[in-house]
Image (cartoon, rainbow, N blue to C red; front, side, top):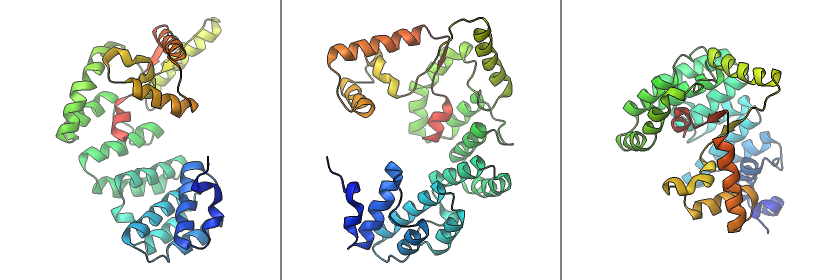
Length: 278
């Protein structure tokens, strides 16, 4: 199968097309740009086409600069861009920039930018910033899972809050007595308790199983509530393995996943942070 990404160099006759395909290929596959990032950024910022094209190229530049840890070029983008401006970044791009700084250990930069973004965001989108704090254990990581649940219910738009209250909250409430490690990323006590269980199993030479369930694992539970259809299962199989399983193989996979889930020592389910970050 041939895709336009297979022969980027053939688009040399069109600067805009070369830029777009090259940046898109980098974004999707991680394949290097055909020229240095400096040259690609300089060229892209000279493009004076339609708003759609220019805004798209600026968005590509933003992602490429973060990927390459080129904050100098990101500053150049903010200076010369027409649409991707630091003070008007989308929430998604703000979160990407915050994650970059905290992952690089740039605490002072993180705190400065976090303060700016926090002041500019809505109460609901501030939960996304809280999520970064909790994941990376910043000095602001002092909000637990139950508090985030409440904040999500009260600050999300009404339709989203209603859907959450109907489909997600009842699950948390039913499992509440056993929700032992929902803050394991940010809570040292929970992390230590979890580690002690693993260490003790190793010492006792006993099997220990932790199974993490997320949206894709709905493949094995389609018959439970009908929310994950056969079409959903087939799409997931194409994504995972590039093929559609025959019915007998699919049944075998489902049986094994269900058995592993039922016998797990710890079962991981999506936390409220997963819904916040979407």
